[in-house]
Image (cartoon, rainbow, N blue to C red):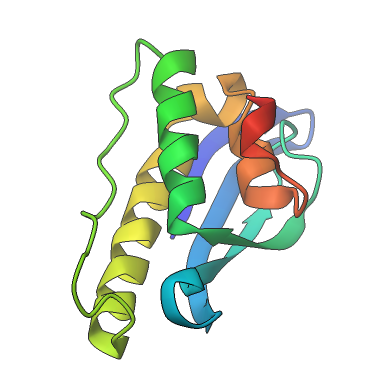
Length: 137
């Protein structure tokens, strides 16, 4: 998905862009220690983001913390819901794909919001920093 907002330079108008993709789910562990993480690919030219292209991996629980942080940080912005928790068959291909699609929709809405693109302290780190620590927030 491409979220963009125009900006003006001495050379004319060009578009800022921010593309986000959630892909390549991987399930790790065995038994009760199993979990799935997802690759987040980010491409942007927005100055608030340190990297023009980045790839990180995040678990669903990371998205939950991220959403909670956004709600505390951005009282004026309505943060979209995450896909619901799944308690049965959560490692089936269909469930994982459904969740991936929901996480991508969530991130596309979040990164497409102009106030969050430039005003959030947590957004760029979540989508770009491989060492992002939810406990630091």
